[in-house]
Image 1: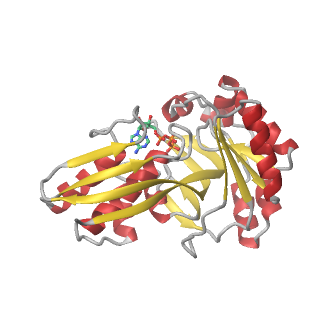
Image 2: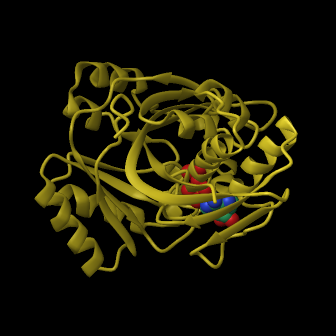
Image 3: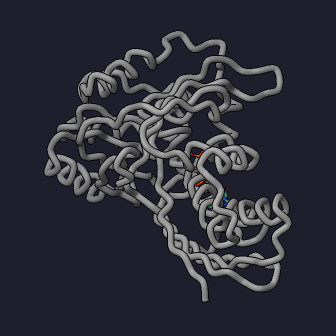
Amino acid sequence: METLQLKAYAKINLGLDVVRRREDGYHEVRMIMQTVKLFDKLTFRLLEEREIRIKTNLGFLPVDKNNLVYKAVKLLQDTYGIEKGMEIDLFKCIPVAAGMAGGSTDCAAALVGASRLFGLDLNKKELMELGVKLGADVPYCVLRGTALSEGIGEVLTPLPPIPDCHILIAKPAVSVSTKFVYEHLDAEGIKAHPDIDGMIAAIKEGSLRGITDRMENVLETVTIPKYPVIAEIKSCMKKQGALNALMSGSGPTVFGIFEREEDAYTAKRLIQERKLANQVYVVLPFNQKTNR
Ligand code: ATP
């Protein structure tokens, strides 16, 4: 029985700017992406029949054609005329509908896993080209590490790894639809744009403070007024020694960057005691160069 197990890592946005709203309704973005060591586990098993079966630990997730893992396997079957199928056990840890690209990273891992078990052995570039058909963030989830993401998220420029730090992730018990946030963003009305170029320079210099001083996300203007708990979590992290704290993607997940691991754990405990968030983790950044 051929099986394969892969980790699908989550991302945070160290910076997120919206440049403009295009005529077709899509938003042009400039984002600094960072993979973090918070992951879902996918176990793949090759099936002789042309079926796709998904099992997951989260009862409320779709396991049919609406799951991005299903879509990834189906895309490979259809593109390459594969007559075999796949059973996937999806163990989720990444918060859902949280701004951490949980679905997109599962999709990327499914492309990698199915490509191997179907004997296609596609390279990164080929997987990224297929991935963009399923979601703007999927190519980045194939690439991983630190990167600048432009266009609608699919134009990627790898950057050097960020300096060592501890990242506290806290997801309050609310779900945010990415579509809702972008629809309510007044893209032309944004006055102060994040200093994305300055952050890129700081990453190249290896300056953690240079990075954290420039952490900004224009989507906070939509999500925070709706869910003020996000601002409370940010302030709690900063009071406990975070160099800075920010909402990731369209939220509601907040992350804080800490130099000292013990400060991150103190903030974690406080956030849990005050019931500000129900999913709280201290993690490390994932480094693409070393693949760890
Ligand atoms: P992003 O950061 O890309 O905006 P997100 O964290 O906001 O992503 P996801 O966790 O990817 O959002 O999930 C959003 C919705 O997608 C879920 O409500 C779920 O119904 C659907 N979905 C489909 N496949 C998956 C999957 N494998 N994991 C999680 N959600 C999935």
